[in-house]
Image (cartoon, rainbow, N blue to C red; front, side):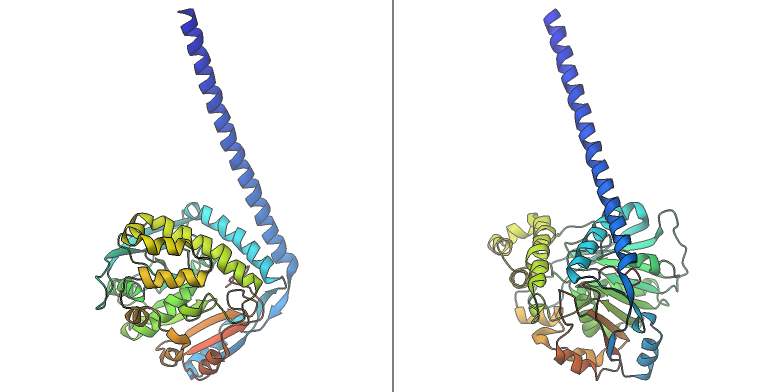
Length: 408
């Protein structure tokens, strides 16, 4: 019995030691993480203060109507904007750390609620692929939920490619938006969001305009007197712009669209004509790995049984454009590619003529040093925008890809 007691004591001591060791390891990791993030935040603040060398003025094209000219004149950042004279690559590194920090602390920083909306795809070459998308309503900073009247303006954001409400990309925009008496919502597309995974084997990397339209219709029905404004960020610009072209005229409440930063035909978006080494790293290394993780692996239980061969082909791709092409062909929800293009991509074949008939004020911003679209939009797009009444393009010399500029 003495041996048994001693054995039990040894076993208990071992378990206790292991538990204490594990707790120590967790504490060590947490401490290291906090120190790392604090140093990163300090580096971001230092770079912003030390390298803010002055102001820049963008070139503005289009927006020739009297109403649009007045709007453009009253946007301060189109007259002078902060200029961080840092290499685009360094801005992206700072921005990536900042975005990671913000994503980790979003839940503890804001009061919000998530609303699910049922959606299905229209058309003759689809079975509908019924699913849900979500809108995250950001009510205010933590502990400061705001009360808004029914007619409060609604700002509906469309996040970047693999992004959602916690990393739009970069949540600094919330600070400025929440200063106003506006209702702030974030549209989270199929398969990429903080709440839902796919229920049907259909998604689009930039989002389905018909899904956004279903949400918009319910929102304006709930608040019929509230003006609606769309704010796109990064690839969310594609969804916002295609939505405006395909459905904008059907929504009387829709008042304006703002797109930050970039825009292109989806079928060539990941192969810009002026792309360089940084473009390839951003697209074919960082973004490709993130897309495989957040779009495919996250939804493997639905996508792989539906088309295992296509799933594996997408997982084996080496470039972002190839990844997009496979996902569009096999997982868009449409068997007819032509119909899919008509209902999803208003800029198919590199054509931006739809901007001539945009029914509301529309501004899209580019940065010349953005690795996603170096030099800004193609010259043919600029030429056409120059004739647009309601649509305008602002081309900033410096800014990378939504990096470092809180005020944007």
